[in-house]
Image (cartoon, rainbow over all chains, first blue to last red; front, side):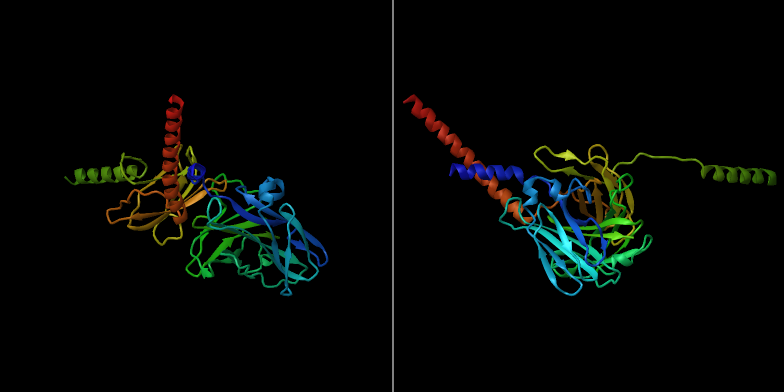
Length: 227
Length: 149
């Protein structure tokens, strides 16, 4: 009985910690030719899109968190990949737009309580673009309504935010690789409407990430490359 | 008489044009203050956090700024309703606070809501924690007693 009471006393102390980690997935190249391979990196932490917070560069405990990556090919087939230390290769022999998904979900009975971190990225293979709005089945999800491959700096990327399959009106943030939070935390901050739709102003080329956070402790990201 | 009126009129015009360049101030109390901190055993204020305040139903922010050294930010709402304050530290931590402003343009003092599981866990942990301390005291007293006998 004494052991149980000590365990609960410790739990009481750790419940005060904040929950702010985000999950994202990046690619070494967002645009490849058919037959080529892309390398994916799962990222986890606070420094969005950073190399130091790629899971492969984190502790072993983080590397064991990610069991699988799902790749939705343009021909409708789904491929499941097993990441090694939060990274791996994607074979792309079919031309079109690939949607790549991963998640880290914690249930209510687990330490630190329930949590859902969801990440998605878009890979363009060849010149032919296909529908990128494939739903990964996440609890919170960002669905691109236009192919990022067709977006140029100065244009808007429309996205739809859903929570448990329904449109979610919430704050939507976006940042790009190399952004320094000097004047604002995010270069883009907007709000999705009652249909869950938000427009992200893409200001420059490079690697972008859209982020939403809902309740404690659910968040989703979408990463893509802009020409 | 006519000349005096002209003079007054000119003086008034000069004064009104001058007032456009003068800046005055008054010190006021009140408004709504939000405090943000990093949770932990020793909570730390979120200094210089990026703040955006949104009036009810508005997409464009009502006000923006930074939190002070104590993690505080104040604003004066101009209408009742659900105001939203978004605060981020630019390093992956942030909150969205709903502030319910009443007809008198005041808001009740509240803390950020905790999820149900956390409330339950905290409650159970407190009970077990107290119980654990009592068991430890009882054991200690027993040992003391045994040592004396």
